[in-house]
Length: 66
Image (cartoon, rainbow, N blue to C red):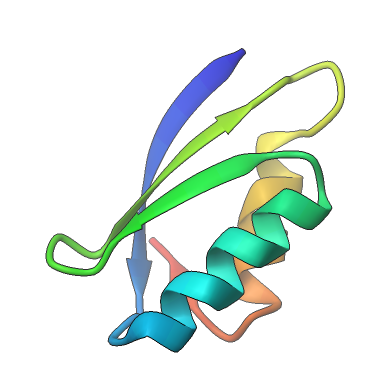
């Protein structure tokens, strides 16, 4: 399992947390949103999910991955 912390812009509430964490679950990754720091800690299996897919899943929810 790999772990990465991404800076994500535009998150501000519980809906943001649910949208991002849910989108990551759908692609087979696990995410933990920290609204205070504007980050998402992501754990994923590189053989199943690419980092590009992780970023795309977040961006598809309307957030910017820095």
